[in-house]
Image (cartoon, rainbow, N blue to C red; front, side):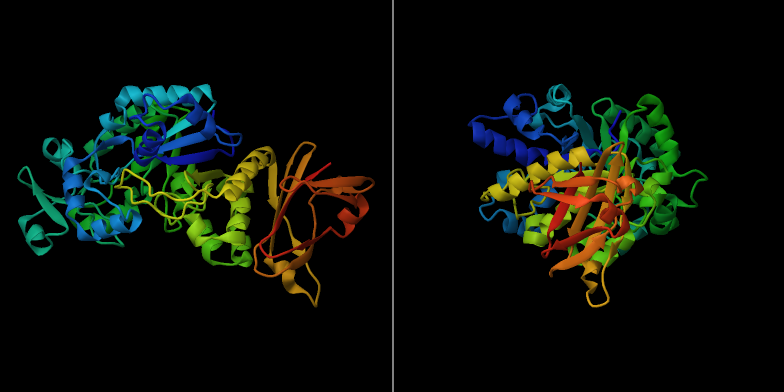
Length: 486
């Protein structure tokens, strides 16, 4: 069974293996990752590893990437010393759901899963429901699984359509952006496609413990009909995900299903069967908004909060060290590490990497490590694992008529039996003072030691005062307390 508040570590498989090959001076695939490397990843507080990009990549998609000037420009920005060998194609332009032989193939993936299991870690892999590579076998063998158009569609919009096997097929797209030129659009309404999706997800589930579904909201009936209704007809009575997941769950009852989700569709996707959905709204608030917007976001019910994935970066977002530097980034890290739901960390995030690598590339640029950042995140990981248990609730902060700075403070508590924790974060660029009321009526009548688990300080406080007036807190800009009550 999965833990209630899992912590996931995302690794970009291909560039990570390239880095290991350079480190050890020999080619390394998933079949022979040294045990000490897995030990470095399996630190206290990590529950699962998401190996992003293990499936067979498309030669046709690679050829398109090699001749796309916009992509080539982004490649050179990330890797100034770019070589042709660095471009290996998109992991979301999947030719087959079979581990790429250049990464170790299916046997190498099985070795990796066994190594993770030995260390108590689960494995997460990707599934891309919306599209496949233009040279995926189904394009010619099962054209009915795709959104198909006419010669007139192709003539009117040559960037949105292509011809294959005598059929005119749509390029995959998100309705808010132009079509992706390297993929073919699948038809969520086609019964045969739904059968095939259930089979593929089941096969992926044979190889891992969780599946992250790319752009999952695109395959809800409402979104798909709005995007493709003219070509695919009316929506079926049943939604795609519940119909597919019923069969997947019968085969893999403990498989964690994770949705990449946007447009405030998290609750809808949770109701359609996903265990966890990206909390992109929280990310945007942490990156660009203030404490009050975060407080409103966290007012949702625990049943909703438990099904969210909190993150500060992933392969689609800029590096946190670049967008959330300094104190704000650390305050945001404490927030995502101590909230309910799942937490997602990204390889290189702890070390302070600043360059977001396009997923087409096989090599990271050389960047200096930030030992202070690494030590802080490792300590936070370990501490948060002991905190996020039991009852969670947000906690009110109170100020004074002449001092409204309490509005910059965020606070929440965890209690599991006699274990009590209080998190207070100054999510603002000025000092803040407040009374913070722990939600435990039995504090009165005794003295309490409040130990900050991150910096080791201990504060002794009277339980009567804590019950009646709350805990007095005075925090510098972007500072925080993670307190355990003893």
